[in-house]
Length: 173
Image (tube, rainbow, N blue to C red; front, side, top):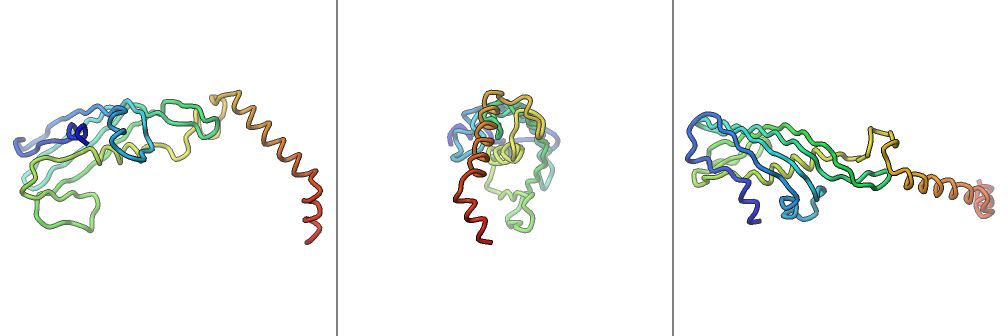
């Protein structure tokens, strides 16, 4: 957790207006999170912080690549990521539980930890169904693995059709 301290912004000494911060998000960042979907990455996170009298406006822009596993052929490939998100942090003592997009900062806080937000934004950007090529296009997949999968799937169908136990069960209807 000590390396996650690098992903914080001390906002108490900042003047009103816009400020820019940049963070490198590499493999060691994801090692700090147990059960992370993303294990390897090479990302740049740019944060534009606009400090106002009563709140902080944060604009995130995360670009780079994460290492993903193709769901079709199980090959590792670099998945491009381009994330743009906005977060609001409001100064006050009461918690705003109705809106998840607003962080409440107490008077005692002097820095804003961004590691959790960056982690969430990257994991949400990871594709649910990962593929080497475009959706449904297996031309970029590992040809050898695709051939093995095709052979296994056609072999099982032939065995199912010739198994006499299934034929007997089908007659029960």
